[in-house]
Image (cartoon, rainbow, N blue to C red; front, side):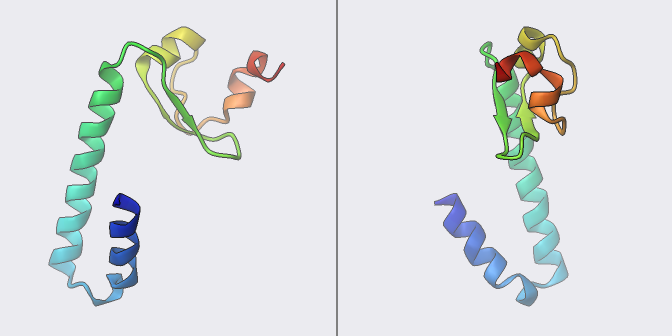
Length: 85
């Protein structure tokens, strides 16, 4: 559902006025902040990795379990090579 909404928004993004676009971006960032707070409250380690290995999200528990700080934007297989065996 969120993907459909995003696709519809992107189809008409060139027709949005500046104020509406700014409002939508602010709402998006607010939702991301809430999502990240929830993920960080979970005691299990969570790591979200793109197909190319780039970490796009990792909570504090994952960093603690893997003994790696600042996983986000790293290439997972390079910073935690023991997981590729």
